[in-house]
Image 1 (tube, rainbow, N blue to C red):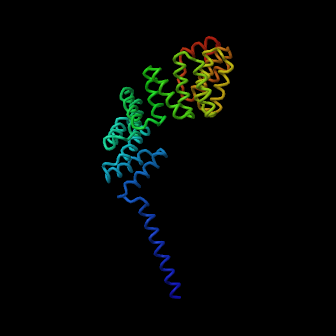
Image 2 (cartoon, rainbow, N blue to C red):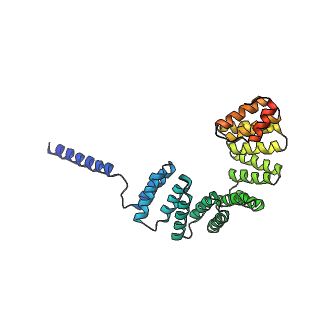
Image 3 (tube, one colour):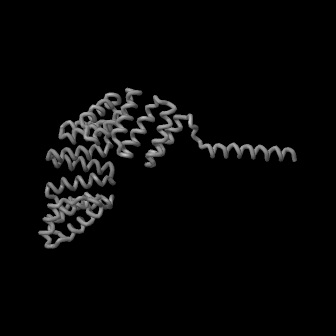
Length: 286
């Protein structure tokens, strides 16, 4: 009986201790690593404000915690669109750890969104200097060169990204876009083909290949590509808009109007000039 009583008492004590942990929470307020990890988990779930609270606590405990600044920067920038706060945090992470390649890259991504292209290029270049075998840094710098109209530099960076990672579908797609800008449509189509081969569910690559086919007058291939893009992503407004253009040129006005409605309903701003042309050609207002 005494043994039974002692066992019951021990079980009660264990349950009480466990209940105490559950109430207090697994994370100790003095554990900066646990706070960081919880913040990252919340960041991935899109709970940006709550994740920032955890990163704040981690920084309060450890003001030299570069990872906490970097991740808080992600929450501010990619999450909440507060780019100045994000850049400030990335810079702080870099100040603490001057070899923090990811923080340079994140700062570059944010500067690009603000149109600070030269600063973005400098940040990506520094990230590459620290880690020259990471394909994403080259791809991201290529995006900035492309937006600046420096197409040869963009192609060089995308090609380097592909050299490092031959399965990098986005780099093929991005290089295809630059070839298209340069009027090299066969090269563009070749790159889109490769992107689709690597990722058969790459809706944007189908859409982009459709544009290249359209420029070459290959309308059946164009329609097929837009159909596939829409099949993969039924909310791909740009693909509906682009298919409407092709149907217009094929004089299939009913199909063109149908696609216009779908694009508009998805919030896409269909060009007013195209709408006017479609009204005149079809003999109807809507």
